[in-house]
Length: 178
Image (cartoon, rainbow, N blue to C red; front, side, top):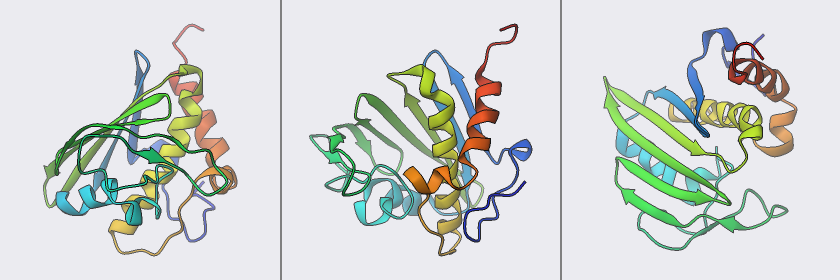
């Protein structure tokens, strides 16, 4: 069923417009975005734009290596977001609390191929995190198309297809024969 997220046109999981894979503790998500690479890059590094779609809302623009922190919202804890690599508009690597996020962008047709590698500190959370990133990347995709859709993180995600997505990823990530 389509996402119940206000005005969301997210396609059902069987169509998987945002592909996810779990291998050796790294959650990989890939999305084709209909926007120029430089525009997608700005949405990854600028807190004024990340706050519109991502749970990672840094305390500074993530355009240089060095210390940074992130806070999903005012009620959430502040976590480490130290940048270890920032090569516009190709690669951004930074901490997200105990995890490491590696964002890679590449031109693809008239748009951009986004790859997120999320090195998990707790692999048992893979399905939960994949579901959350799926919703966030769908919001990013739609915002880049010019749609005014709300960010879908935390409790908002829980109310909008998150459980269904999590359950589907849990099945997908379970090794065959278990």
